[in-house]
Image (cartoon, rainbow, N blue to C red; front, side):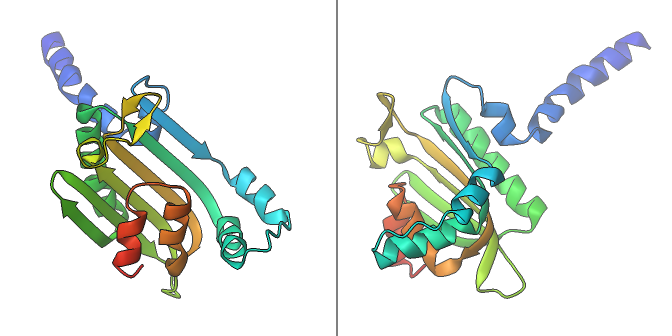
Length: 183
């Protein structure tokens, strides 16, 4: 009987790791760069009345003030990229996210999922995953290592027409493709 429970535990233990939120799992991994901006920071930015004089930058600042959560994972590891890819698919299904854009060029892929709010002019959640970056954009590096994948999660009140501009301003791969796709 003891053997049965030990065997059962060993079989179920890996499943608990899969259920662990991907951002928490990799936040201290040396092969992953993790970025988390908390709601407090966005509240602080929103309370500041910064004006740059540039209408595009002012519009982005307004959009940023509607964001409540920003998380990103960046890795050069193909195995971690594959695991994140699987997590993204599971998360999109579990949270009822809609696929907005799916681009594939050579070995590089970009997929964008969203959760629209009731007004359908803003989204509550954006999940973007891009992999195969090292092959397509070899100059994309972080700390001297090629970037294989980027996972981006943004939550808040985000206007659809400003998503691509924000991603482009942050110089993340996929921004140009989103603009071409009309987003």
